[in-house]
Every structure is written in C-alpha cells, then in structure tokens.
Image (cartoon, rainbow, N blue to C red; front, side, top):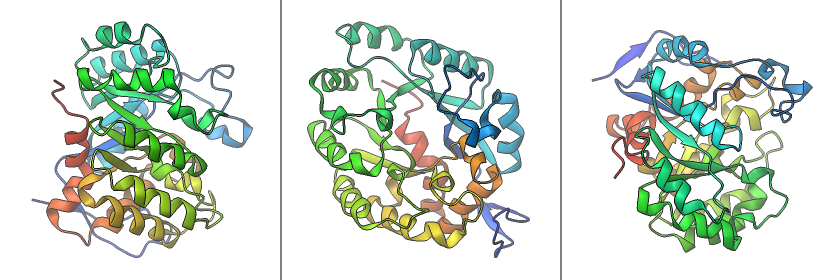
Length: 300
C-alpha cells in the first residue's frame, strides 16, 4: 500500500502528490568527520561539504521524505574508513548496510576479506576508480585478482567511474559474470554539457550483463548546480531504464554531496517523479526492494 506526500521540493514543482513506498531505501549516502588534508577533494567550490556529516544530520531528512533505511558508502580509501562506517551502522539501526574499502590489489587480500566477512552489516566494497589516472585501472591483474575473491564471501562491488572509463568497465564486468556489480551515479554522465551518445552506447552494452545494476544517484552534481531542471535528467533516466530495466535500478541520494546541487528532498523528488508512472511493483523495486536484494540483507 502507498501513501502520498503533500508536496514536492523540485525546483520546477509541477506535481503535488507522488507515491511513497513503505520500505524506501537510500542506497548511497556518505558520512565523515571533515579533515581538510584527508578530504582535499572537497575544495573551496564545495564549501557546503567542508564540515562533519554524521547520522544525526541525515535521519530527520530521511524520515521527512519517507526513507526508512540507507547504505553507507566509503568516501576515504582506508580500512579505518570501513571500521568507522561499521561503527556508525552498529550505533544507528537505520544504516542497514555498509560499502567499505579494502585494498583489492594487496597480496593479502584473501586474508583481509576473510577478516571482514565477520561483519554482518558489511555488504561489499568500492574503490574510487574515477580518481585513477590509468583509464584501464579496473583491468589491472592485481586488482582483478582481488575482485575475483569477493564472490566467495558474497561481497558486492560498487563501480565508481567517469564516462571515459566505461570501455574498461565493459571488459571488467565480462570477466566476472557471477559477481554482483552496481554502477554508481549512472557513471556520472556530463549532464551539464548535454553529452550523451558515447555514454549511452557503452551503458547499453554494460547493461546486457545481468549481474550489473545501476544506481539512480548523483545526477544533480553532474548538472548545473544552480540552474538544473527536471527535464535535464529525463534522457539519462530513459536510457538506464530502457537498458537495465526497473529490476536492476536502485535509488540513491549521494547525500551530502548532493547538497552541492539541491536539497535531499530535491534528489528524492526527481526519482519519485520519474518512476511514479510505473507499476507499484516497479516503483517499490527502484525505491527500495532492488537495493535490499542487491545488498543481500543476509549475506551468505
């Protein structure tokens, strides 16, 4: 059964009611205690992010938008970050799962994965591949050796890349047909500049691999932060919906990074507005069920 919110926070507010699932899940949030040295990627153009963001800052926003749980995703590449997020998840029940970091290139990766397999809330791992200079980083032998070890523990892997790295992503997912992958932020298409065709062609090919999902997240930060419109996102949403189908899409806010381009309500509202025309089952899948299935609330 669905209930309805009374308004929508989209800047070009053209709908007054939209559905809310009873079990909506935000599959992509970050938490940090801001450190200007460690978090040097947060430069002065992102001043809104230059402070601590912790669960107490998010919980009220989630509840106000009908979101009942979230997945905390790493923002720093250290095992300390993984433990930090796991501790937050232990203390806050609404953090349902954690996507951490481990050095998948390490010769000791099998030992480290065995160690991390004891943590029930640890769903999987991510590497910030978008920051790697090597466009073929995902295909390095040492990295692939680590990824090959994830499946035996039931760990997922989040793919964080820019569009120019999608050729490597296609070859990468071909190598691991049984590994659960999800592409973060639609692979960050250049929405502000309207670039589409090359990104779309590769996303269609990647989506042919049934073990690959896609997060409907991170869109406002790739758009004009001050001047985006809902219509800017529609071609990109059309493409991933056509390519992946609603069964392999999942909502994520990318909070607090999304605050660069709007409010939490804006981000939730964009995705709700687009998928409200689909069936109840499809809507509930994108807004919650698919994320629950992917991140396997009971990992084997």
